[in-house]
Length: 449
Image (tube, rainbow, N blue to C red; front, side, top):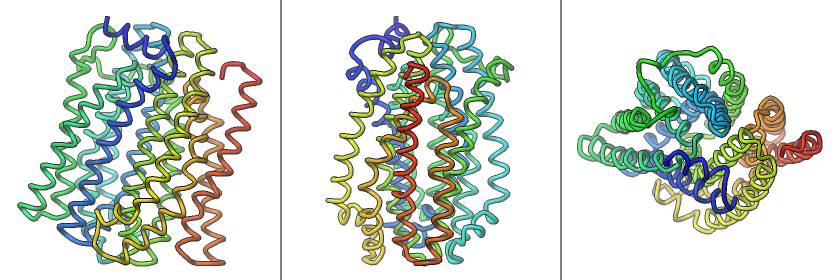
């Protein structure tokens, strides 16, 4: 009865209502995930100082996004395949898909932990990280990378649950994880004065807690959704399907992260205050991205299950509805961020120069979030029907390559912070236009979307 209800949330009923029912738990869950990341920044910014703030954010944050982003992209292949076969009621392939996904998480987590710990200092030097924060940044990265196995297991477990329509359980787990992280942050930093190490350790332990909870949930599930530790291994058919869809998205995530690293390196050259401002801005910027990603996950899951069930008319309607809802949400968010920017930055630091630099960054970028909505929803819909190669090519060319070109040329003409920041709206506009054109072409050619 429970699984039938979850299926009906995706393939039955009024689209806008079912989208919102699926979207809100994801958005709230993403909010709590961002909250405990933000708490790290608030705690070190207020109780340790500007250098610690730059160490936890800045270059360290970009390196974490590089590694975790790749696996998140890779795991999207697993979630799309599981959603499609769940919609088609193929129980055997769903079972194989779940256990294969866990095998990918375990292998990837262990391997990338070793690589990340070993290469952390070199990666930070490549990013022109200010010398006064290199030691703390290295410490933070190494502790965080030590827990990548837990991070990957949680990500894949929550992706599996969302793929079959359960967006509430990941929410409950994230709330619990957030509470654990906040408590541990305060204990390690405020009480025991462990600084950057304390924040990193709190994050690691909270991620371990979330990994245990999501795994326990899947082990207690019934039928084709039940996870059995003894069956976690690579299944050739599932592995090929998941890798085929996941690798392009994973590569896209890597190149996204690399371009952000290039931007971070450029900003680092302006000093610690700019690095700290960008770190704080990143936490505010994440408010939009948590809403954006929740809509992206929602439309990919909706399209994936309805594609598996053969309901093409429902696919087209859900894309239009989801696009309209996110445009409204993005507009509200832009107004909120700009109107309250001073107050928001003061939550992270009392340094007036850092607050001013961060506020200027926000005003330059935030209005263009509305443009990115088209990229997220259209790319998400295309992923849902298994079309990943062309969207990745569009994204890589329109955002990643063009952004690097912009930085290499524009900075020589005018080496300012605003020139670096403008690389975002310029690349978003071009990529959105290309996506709209490709989506229209795909609609005319296939009639599916």
